[in-house]
Amino acid sequence: MLQPRTYPELLGKALVLEAEPFATMADDDNPWVEGLFFVVCLGVIVGLAQFVGGILLTASLPPAETLRETAMILLRQLFAWSSTPALDLESSEAWMRQGWQWLTFASGYGGGWARLILMIFVPAGLMTTWLAYGAISHVAARRLGGIGTLNQTLGVTALTVAPQALLILTLIPFVSVAWPLLAVWALLIAFRGLEVAHDLSWQRSVLAALAAPALLAVLAIGTLMIMSFSIMIGGIA
Amino acid sequence: MTRDSFASNQFLREDGSLPPSPTAAMLHDWLPERDQAINALQLQFEPFAEEEAIDEYAPDSVWFTSMRQGLGLIVLTGLVAGFLPFLVNWFLAARVGVVVPLSDIVRGAASANMSETFGQGLLGSGWLALETAAGMPPAVFPGWLAAGLSALGLWINWPLNLLAIWLVYGAGIAMVAHWLGSPVTLQRFYALTSYAVLPLALMGLGIIPCIGFLVSLFAAIYAFAVYIFGVRAATGLTPGRAIVATIAPLAILGAAGSILAFSSGAFIAGIIALLLGS
View 1: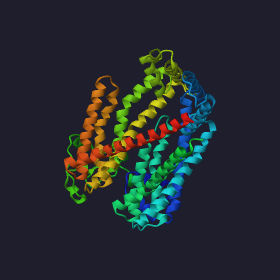
View 2 (view 1 turned 45 degrees about the vertical axis):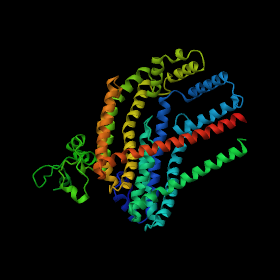
View 3 (view 1 turned 180 degrees about the horizontal axis):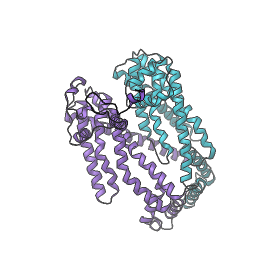
View 4 (view 1 turned 120 degrees about the vertical axis):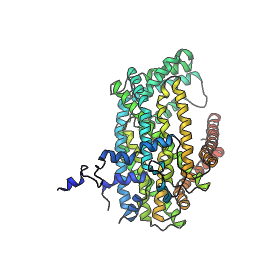
């Protein structure tokens, strides 16, 4: 069992794609438990950083309610200027209020104590993503001739959450970490991890690492197409 | 002698010299040597070699750079490049007493005289409302502190953006290079291409009127040249293939982006048409 104090070193070495942390995880006596603890620890720290970041952002910006009312005034002016027959002002205002709520919740701006939910959402989200990604890439790696166990795959793929450590910087208002950076860095780590744990060639390791995002893309495109056809056939109502 | 005295950095090495201090050792772990950086800026990248043959290169060769040192170089360059904009942003936003993005709106609208330009119509009153909202004081913090925190956040975005370009775009180039037959490893590729960010340290001067644009343009062209040399050395491809490998991801991304934008636009337009027609 690894000690949590070794996690920063593990994380740093995984970020620069060294083989050592993956071998350490794969050779651990219980890789998936180690992975779970690692993911939850990082998730809690990131969640806490985002919580504090949300408070600092709210304190740095004008009151959220004032800005929302300004947006409402703009909306009413838009309706006064052009009378759109299909949309009425009341329902548009309701939509806007709903959208504003989601926006403030997601950005941590305003939202009061609701932002505390982030501290549960972030670790839970990371854990779910890790488990789903680990399971899919394990199946793909085994189909491609990999020799690692599911336990080892979950251990090495836990390190794919390492780039999420950058989100700790969102503690400071207006820091934004690009999602392609997090996603591509995680894929690079997964590629190295699967290569080490399953003893795969680089080509097969790339395919195994890309299996989960490819599946997700197929599902998303399929859902979008079904939605489009439903709208075309049945209309919005 | 206690255990601590053996661990001390005052303990002499075999040649009689003192070992490097912990700070110097850490810097060495996270940053390349000065001579390596100068070599890279002079486009002196030794040709591609297998791992065993690299030992024959001079000690200040860029080939003795690790990915970790490349990462450190990018973070440091980003911080250097963003320092001047940080100070300017903080000063300007503190004068208005709001965060930097809102201060930009207020100053931009005031300099272009937006409200008067757009008159009494929808756009004019919209701009007036936006200006008013942007000029509102922070909910809790004093203006200078809110301005400072937001300027700090935007400063930290400099190294994050450079990291994103280096890693995301580099992954695409490494894949294309593999398809073109290069035996490059990811760590070696990222280590050698990290030097391309060095000229981008000048990008922070982009805020200076007139000269800033020229300096930024020079920095971008210089960085591209260093990147091409880095890609060629890391991958062992011919110069032509190295250029193709560097440009190919951009072309693929452009094509994919256009298709995605067109199909999303058509989808959204279809929904709006259905909404208005219902």
